Length: 166
Image (cartoon, rainbow, N blue to C red; front, side, top):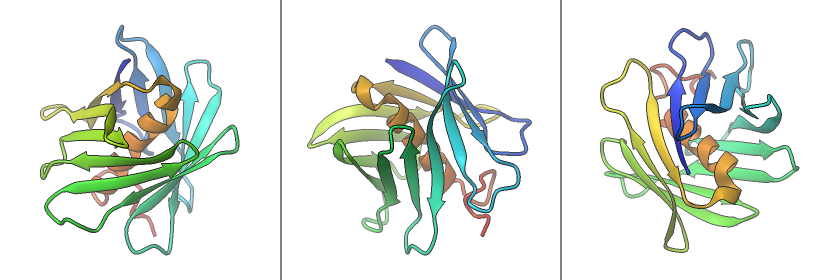
Protein backbone atom coordinates (compact mmCIF):
# COMPACT_ATOMS: atom_id res chain seq x y z
CA UNK A 1 0.00 0.00 0.00
CA UNK A 2 1.30 3.45 -0.84
CA UNK A 3 0.89 6.54 1.33
CA UNK A 4 1.83 10.19 1.09
CA UNK A 5 2.83 11.98 4.31
CA UNK A 6 2.53 15.77 4.10
CA UNK A 7 3.52 18.12 6.89
CA UNK A 8 1.02 20.90 7.54
CA UNK A 9 2.62 24.23 6.65
CA UNK A 10 0.59 26.55 8.86
CA UNK A 11 0.66 24.66 12.13
CA UNK A 12 2.16 25.59 15.49
CA UNK A 13 2.96 21.93 16.13
CA UNK A 14 4.42 19.13 14.04
CA UNK A 15 1.24 17.93 12.33
CA UNK A 16 0.91 15.71 9.28
CA UNK A 17 -1.82 14.41 6.98
CA UNK A 18 -1.30 10.90 5.57
CA UNK A 19 -3.14 10.09 2.34
CA UNK A 20 -3.65 6.70 0.70
CA UNK A 21 -3.05 5.90 -2.99
CA UNK A 22 -6.39 7.45 -3.99
CA UNK A 23 -5.64 10.74 -2.19
CA UNK A 24 -8.05 10.07 0.69
CA UNK A 25 -7.03 11.04 4.23
CA UNK A 26 -6.09 7.71 5.84
CA UNK A 27 -4.28 8.93 8.97
CA UNK A 28 -3.36 12.15 10.72
CA UNK A 29 -0.58 13.05 13.14
CA UNK A 30 -1.10 15.85 15.61
CA UNK A 31 1.44 17.37 17.95
CA UNK A 32 0.73 19.09 21.22
CA UNK A 33 1.34 22.82 21.44
CA UNK A 34 2.38 23.02 25.10
CA UNK A 35 4.12 19.73 25.74
CA UNK A 36 7.34 19.11 27.63
CA UNK A 37 7.81 15.71 25.99
CA UNK A 38 7.07 17.00 22.45
CA UNK A 39 4.68 14.13 21.83
CA UNK A 40 2.63 13.49 18.72
CA UNK A 41 -0.38 11.23 18.25
CA UNK A 42 -1.24 9.13 15.18
CA UNK A 43 -4.98 8.82 14.46
CA UNK A 44 -6.80 6.77 11.83
CA UNK A 45 -9.31 8.40 9.45
CA UNK A 46 -12.11 8.00 12.03
CA UNK A 47 -10.13 9.84 14.72
CA UNK A 48 -9.25 6.73 16.72
CA UNK A 49 -5.85 7.03 18.44
CA UNK A 50 -3.44 4.36 17.18
CA UNK A 51 -0.19 5.36 18.89
CA UNK A 52 1.79 8.15 20.52
CA UNK A 53 5.27 9.25 19.49
CA UNK A 54 7.34 10.41 22.45
CA UNK A 55 10.91 11.57 22.62
CA UNK A 56 13.10 9.58 24.97
CA UNK A 57 15.41 11.84 26.97
CA UNK A 58 18.80 11.14 28.54
CA UNK A 59 20.11 9.09 25.62
CA UNK A 60 23.35 9.49 23.69
CA UNK A 61 21.75 9.20 20.26
CA UNK A 62 18.27 10.59 19.42
CA UNK A 63 15.61 8.09 20.43
CA UNK A 64 11.80 8.04 20.26
CA UNK A 65 9.21 5.65 21.65
CA UNK A 66 6.02 4.57 19.94
CA UNK A 67 3.36 3.78 22.53
CA UNK A 68 0.64 1.80 20.73
CA UNK A 69 -3.01 1.70 21.74
CA UNK A 70 -2.74 -2.09 22.23
CA UNK A 71 -0.13 -1.53 24.97
CA UNK A 72 2.92 -2.49 22.93
CA UNK A 73 5.96 -0.26 22.79
CA UNK A 74 8.43 0.31 19.96
CA UNK A 75 11.80 2.04 20.27
CA UNK A 76 13.36 3.96 17.36
CA UNK A 77 17.02 4.84 17.80
CA UNK A 78 19.45 6.64 15.48
CA UNK A 79 22.64 4.62 15.03
CA UNK A 80 26.03 6.19 15.59
CA UNK A 81 28.02 4.36 12.93
CA UNK A 82 28.70 4.75 10.01
CA UNK A 83 28.81 8.56 9.86
CA UNK A 84 28.10 8.90 6.13
CA UNK A 85 24.69 7.21 6.20
CA UNK A 86 21.45 7.65 8.11
CA UNK A 87 20.70 4.48 10.00
CA UNK A 88 18.03 3.74 12.60
CA UNK A 89 16.91 0.64 14.46
CA UNK A 90 13.29 -0.04 15.35
CA UNK A 91 12.76 -2.56 18.13
CA UNK A 92 9.33 -3.86 19.05
CA UNK A 93 7.10 -6.90 19.50
CA UNK A 94 7.46 -7.87 15.82
CA UNK A 95 11.26 -7.99 16.15
CA UNK A 96 13.97 -5.60 15.03
CA UNK A 97 13.72 -3.49 11.90
CA UNK A 98 16.56 -1.55 10.29
CA UNK A 99 16.16 1.75 8.48
CA UNK A 100 18.90 2.77 6.06
CA UNK A 101 19.06 6.11 4.28
CA UNK A 102 21.45 7.84 1.94
CA UNK A 103 23.72 10.79 2.70
CA UNK A 104 21.12 13.38 1.64
CA UNK A 105 18.37 11.75 3.73
CA UNK A 106 15.87 11.54 0.90
CA UNK A 107 15.60 7.77 0.36
CA UNK A 108 15.12 5.08 3.00
CA UNK A 109 14.54 1.35 3.08
CA UNK A 110 13.10 -0.32 6.14
CA UNK A 111 13.93 -4.01 6.35
CA UNK A 112 13.53 -6.94 8.70
CA UNK A 113 15.96 -9.85 8.46
CA UNK A 114 17.05 -8.67 5.00
CA UNK A 115 13.49 -8.39 3.63
CA UNK A 116 12.29 -4.89 2.70
CA UNK A 117 9.05 -4.03 4.55
CA UNK A 118 8.84 -0.37 3.41
CA UNK A 119 10.48 2.14 1.09
CA UNK A 120 10.47 5.86 1.81
CA UNK A 121 11.20 8.73 -0.56
CA UNK A 122 11.24 12.40 0.37
CA UNK A 123 10.09 14.99 -2.13
CA UNK A 124 12.91 17.33 -3.15
CA UNK A 125 10.82 20.33 -4.12
CA UNK A 126 7.81 21.03 -1.94
CA UNK A 127 6.65 23.74 0.46
CA UNK A 128 6.54 21.33 3.37
CA UNK A 129 8.15 18.00 4.16
CA UNK A 130 6.45 15.40 1.97
CA UNK A 131 7.25 11.68 1.95
CA UNK A 132 6.08 8.83 -0.25
CA UNK A 133 5.89 5.55 1.67
CA UNK A 134 5.38 2.16 0.05
CA UNK A 135 4.50 -0.42 2.73
CA UNK A 136 4.87 -4.15 2.05
CA UNK A 137 3.93 -5.32 5.60
CA UNK A 138 0.32 -4.15 6.18
CA UNK A 139 0.27 -5.32 9.83
CA UNK A 140 2.96 -2.75 10.65
CA UNK A 141 1.41 0.20 8.78
CA UNK A 142 0.89 2.48 11.80
CA UNK A 143 4.36 1.78 13.20
CA UNK A 144 6.09 2.25 9.84
CA UNK A 145 4.31 5.55 9.17
CA UNK A 146 5.22 6.73 12.67
CA UNK A 147 8.84 5.72 12.01
CA UNK A 148 8.90 8.06 9.01
CA UNK A 149 7.60 10.88 11.23
CA UNK A 150 10.41 10.11 13.68
CA UNK A 151 12.99 10.26 10.87
CA UNK A 152 11.64 13.69 9.96
CA UNK A 153 11.84 14.85 13.58
CA UNK A 154 15.40 13.61 14.09
CA UNK A 155 16.87 14.57 10.71
CA UNK A 156 15.36 18.06 10.75
CA UNK A 157 15.67 18.96 14.42
CA UNK A 158 16.29 22.66 14.86
CA UNK A 159 14.56 23.60 11.59
CA UNK A 160 10.84 22.92 11.91
CA UNK A 161 10.66 20.10 14.37
CA UNK A 162 10.00 20.02 18.09
CA UNK A 163 12.52 17.29 18.91
CA UNK A 164 15.07 19.85 20.08
CA UNK A 165 12.78 21.43 22.66
CA UNK A 166 14.76 20.54 25.77
